Image 1 (cartoon, rainbow, N blue to C red):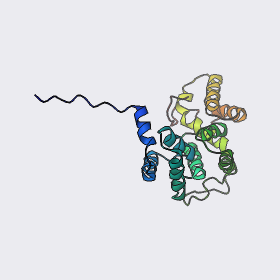
Image 2 (cartoon, helix red, strand yellow):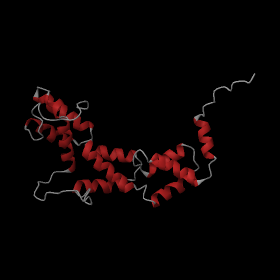
Image 3 (tube, rainbow, N blue to C red):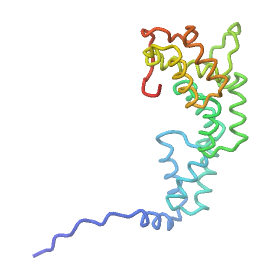
Length: 212
């Protein structure tokens, strides 16, 4: 009677690292890096950390990163700009919080300083052909504009707070949690009862209420 083979042993994390450490084909490491970029853009440090953690040899990791940089698949400056623009568009954060996020992505301080300077002076995204700038519009700081957008996203939940002082306190806490400086938190939170951010009625459209 032929013996039935047992279940195949699952490869352990240590086994996978050992197998990858034995790889000597640069194309294999390059392919692994490309797969990591399929979900979203990454910083150089993120790709290096992923490949190194997976067990690939340092010299092959360096080669893969150099090749992807040559191909334009890795660009920390472009990554930082896209990250900040995405935050300002869909998940507003203060400069302090954005700086922490970019640092956690492994970006160098000079790259972070450059993109945040562009955000402050209004030149971020200036190369976007679809960007429309109204020269007569009053100048509002990037953090102030982002704070107002965040408050507007949570307009509905804030409007349900009947007591004006509690409503302002809740708006202040929301802004502080998202990295805005105390002055911006205070000014924008105070505006919720003046209609400056359009949240003084329950009919205003708002975003998710979970973070307010």
